[in-house]
Image 1 (cartoon, rainbow, N blue to C red):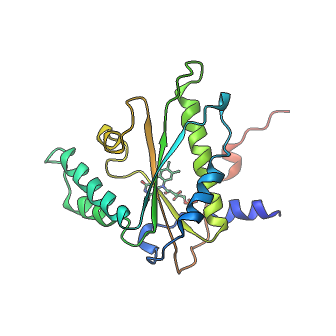
Image 2 (image 1 turned 90 degrees about the vertical axis):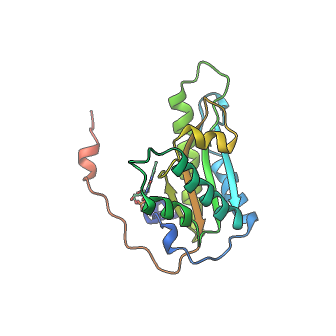
Image 3 (image 1 turned 60 degrees about the vertical axis):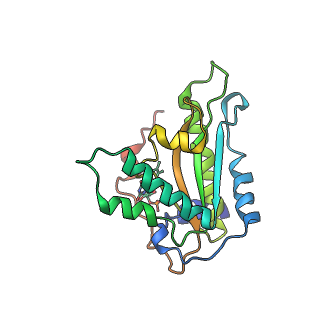
Length: 191
Ligand SMILES: Cc1cc2nc3c(=O)[nH]c(=O)nc-3n(C[C@H](O)[C@H](O)[C@H](O)COP(=O)(O)O)c2cc1C
């Protein structure tokens, strides 16, 4: 098994609630972004765009996100528990990277390709973080996908928010990963 095989297998989602409040140096976060930037793209569109919140800005984002949830949820669907969860989401996280796809102006590249290329960039980032012993959580709850979130972040109509990546340190070793479906169910070989 090579080093990269280990990194891929051992990467685990670590929820922000398990993060311990430690601060990651901005330079290390920049390294992760630089590695994310090496993802493949069709026609060199490089559609990923990262909005990075650091330190107390993470807490402010969470408060703003909770308010967006309140403003954009019908009264009969609104849950105080969800509001409070969003408001405290990154309480002990160090950074939050909002993963966005910025639609380029090459009409030959389908939107789907811009989305998957951005997901490739995200996986680079997750693996690089994991290899450095950092905790990362990719969340899409609350109003992540709502147009109001795009507006809040200053994105255009054709752009997309794909996730909220909370980063930090965690003390506890994660439980081993599990895959529900056997690989054989997800592969068909043709010879
Ligand atoms: C696109 C995407 C969206 C996700 N959204 C959420 C989410 O909203 N809430 C959550 O608890 N986990 C979310 N996750 C994390 C998954 O739950 C996690 O990856 C899964 O449990 C597998 O665990 P592992 O990452 O340790 O292999 C998301 C992951 C991806 C790739």
